[in-house]
Each structure stands twice: as structure tokens, then as C-alpha cells.
Length: 288
Image 1 (cartoon, helix red, strand yellow):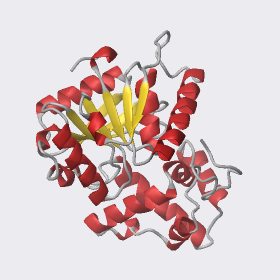
Image 2: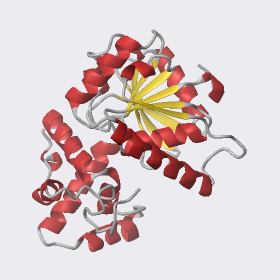
Image 3: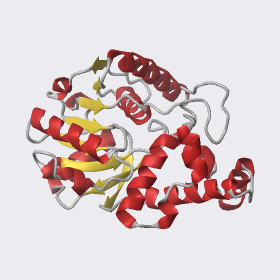
């Protein structure tokens, strides 16, 4: 591996919020991307979303000056990831789904290919048992939007090799990201702190202690939280948040991670946050 974008070929599996974020980040730094998902319709929408995010990153000055964006290819076949130097799994936060994708990918790619899970809560070693070469798997928790936030959380599983850590460091440097390495655990660092906070904030609204706006306003104004926990939850996706909280609760038994009724009611109503146009806040239309 190297930090020259011409030496990298990235496959991203999953064309949702984080998959399109990561794809836009890589393309903007000159790294070609194969984006894989289950249907042509999903991929057509994802391609438009990537283009919008790439344009936004350019307008915000978040991409290397003078660098021509690389080419995006979309596919419904995992086989088209075979020539990648790195595969990033960014599918829904369900253990069995991630394990299935990673298992299939690991059988297709050459030995020495870097395998990354963008999981937000599932322990890396839990998924490593499903792949052909567990030492090649590492977690990288990109923040949303990935093309705006420079810091990422790198999760080293017990079986992740030194060579894998070197390869992921090279890739992140190529993408202009800075990674801090943490050891494997449910939720790692960011979401062991953030997700229970969001859940507690939602319960305060549920119990009538304060409105959504007041809860966020207090954490912004008093604690310096950039957007407030509930607006952050809308950006994450409330459906993904509930999945992650369930992972944390099942693996830690911490009652603060049991999704509160208000959060569950929003998800049951299809109000997932910015991506559906409504969550804790009403955005008026579906956000890109």
C-alpha cells in the first residue's frame, strides 16, 4: 500500500448514507470506487447522492485543490470487488448481514486485500470469525459526513495484524483522514458515549422534561455540542441508531442502551431523520 491515490482501488459495499459518504470522500481524493448494492434502482439513487456530496465537498473546500475526482463504477455483483485493494463494508447495522457480506467478499478478493467494516457498534472480532483471513479485517468508523469530518475511529480487533494497521493508515492518509486507534469492544469509544446520550436525551423529551429544541439548545450552549444530540441522531438515521442501541444493549446489558419508546415510535412511523425528511425535527423534504 501507499499514499498515492493511483495505487488504491476501493470497493464500497452498501449505497446508503455512509456508503455514499465514503465513496464521495474517496473519489474526491482521486481514488476510484466500485459501489456495490442489491439493485440497479438503489445504485441509480446512490450515484446521484454521491455526485451531490462530491459537489458539496468541493464547494466547501474539503477536497485536495487541483485533483481530478476519480471514476465511480456501480454494480449489483460482489464479484466486481475482486480487483480492489481495499473493500469497505457499509451495509445496515445488523450482525448477520455484515458477517454475510464480509464472508463473501473475503472469498472473492486476493490475500492481502484490506477489509474494513464501517460498523458503528458490532465488535470487529465477532465479524472476523466469518472471514477467510481474520487478520486482514479492521474497523474504521467514519463520521457523517465523511468528506467533512477529518477524524475517524480505527478499531483494531484481537486478530487484526500489524500489516493491516499499516495498510489502513496508508489509506486514511491518502483520503486526508486522521485515525485514532482503539481496542475492540461493543460501540468502541464514540458510540459507547454518544448513543446512550442520544437515548437519554430522547427519553427526556418523552417524559415531558423538555422539548427537542430545548434539549439540543442546552447541550449546544452549555456543553459545546456542535449540533445537539437529537439533531445528530437525525443525521445518523434513527433506524440505524435503534439497531446500534440494540447491539450495545444485547452485548453490555447496560439499560441506558435500551431504546426508549419515543425513539422506537419514530422508527415505527418511518421517521428516520434527515434521509426521510422527518425525525426528531421536520426537514420539510427528504434530505440528500
